[in-house]
Image (tube, rainbow over the protein chains, first blue to last red):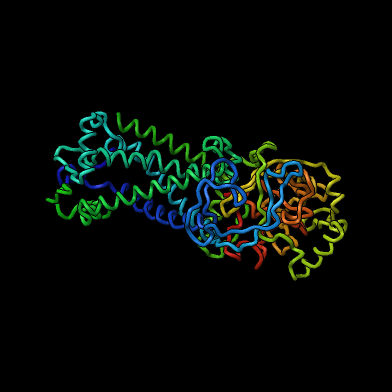
Length: 267
Length: 251
């Protein structure tokens, strides 16, 4: 019941199993939708903070220059909330109408999140039980010899990525990148997202403790998104550089139409 | 051997998922918000059902210390009296009289509908909580709220067993509703005090709802009427759903 043997298309490469191909495209569509709706949500309040609380009357860690709300919001009637602490917290009334498309933005974000969480869990469980991660994604200890790691880094830095016939399907840095996305970034982005839900954080308050508060979770959520965005850019560039048509065939119909195709890139 | 091992794991997973499914089915909400065929509203309904089915219920939101209290923006309506509406005019009059004539009407599927004056609400057991207000826009603020548990008010009028939702309206013409699980949550209060003072007008004077398990937009300010209903009420053109928003804001 392990993975069905796939046809060896070219040295060091075989077809992606069907469950990988299906989950890849569901997750890709979900991540794209989450990225667009996430930016729309962020545009309503493009300020990031650390800790539990953060708002327009408090200093921001960073204010992102995205959308019409950037440095735009104004208040009136600013007054300290404690009579004995004039320099302490204040209250004030907002006078500016702000850009806010969260009606569809939030609902689309959470709808798309279901297509990340459910197929993502199916992918994780299938990958674990079929030994897919051990065989293909997780770096093997033999690959971690410093000279080999150094060679990979050097080759990538020079854009001369070599694949030898007896190499594993994925290069070491490729395995690092995929392992990071599957085992670190994706769980982190989901957990920080859930931490922002008032019902979830009431049910599991350790999430607030783990991420240092509601606003910290929001900031980590955004930072993880940026990391995933960078990964996606590099991923797409590498797919194009290593033969766009062949790679797309391998991830859609499951095999390369050019059995003689080489995986060599950049040389 | 390998196959047998896999089957055992598979059986364990199947059994686990089946029992999770059974528990989830039993806890699934009896009535979901209408979707009107809109795909986003379907997603909202799935999220609501999943949270109700899978999460431990009526857990208390985190509470903070006085030192954690932060600055607090007032957004949306900051004075209903400035509105040129019937309710705006009535609010202006009540405000001028220091809300002595303000009353909260509690009606619908209750055994004895009645109104509560501010003094009558204050005579009920009071509760103070320092909680985080999370706005759907993305900001948050920590404040101290004093009021009466909504549960006490509803107990005083007697909830009919057929009641399912609480609809509430406000002097700025807002209308919203919550299920009874949230209405009877121990931290759901009708707040008349903020940060040790009377609730200021921009934050909802004389009385606002504090619902700590959903986003701030559900905690309507300037409360006018509470109505227990037996079936889901979308609030009409002023309600969240017909305005393109999710009714459930626990996420």
